[in-house]
Image (cartoon, rainbow, N blue to C red; front, side):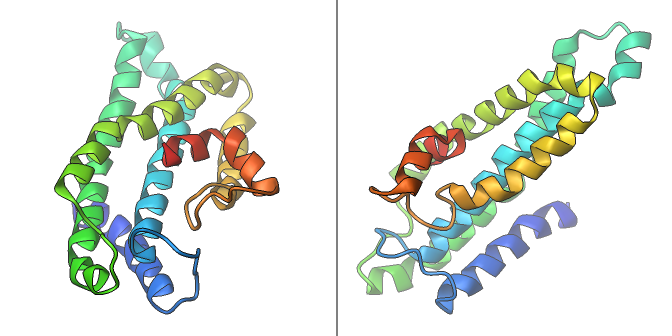
Length: 191
C-alpha cells in the first residue's frame, strides 16, 4: 500500500514544485497551476494505465483462458478492478493537494476546491477510464498476434501527454487548438 500511495504522491509533489517555482507556467487559470497540473497528470496516468492494461490483458491471460473455464469478461473486470484500486491512491492525493492549497489559492483570488465540483469530478471520473479501456480493448486482439502493438501504444502515449491539456490549457487558436479538438485524451480531460 505504501508504494501504491507513494507513486501518485511523488508525481504530484514534483509538479507542485515545478508550478510553485514557475518552471512550468501554463498561463492564467481559474485554479492554482499546481492543482491543474496534478489533476491533469494523475488523470492522464489513469487513462494511460487503462489503455495499456487493457491492451495486454488478453495476451497475459491467454494460458489461463485456455485451461480454465473463465468468461473473457472476467479479464476485463480484473483490469477495471486494478484501475479502481490504483485510483484509491490517486484520488486522495488529488484531494490532499486541493485542500492544502486552498488558503494560498484564496489569497490569490482562485479556488482550488469546492465540494460540489469534487463530487462532479468523481461522477465523471469513469469518463477517463472507459475511453482508455476502449482503445486498449480495440487493440488487444492485434496485440495477441503482434506483440509490438502494446509497445506502440506505450510509445504513442508518452508524447501524446504533451499534446493533451495536462500541463497547459487547450489553446483557442492555432495548430494545438485543432489537435485538442481531435485528440481523444484532450476531449476526455477537458469535458
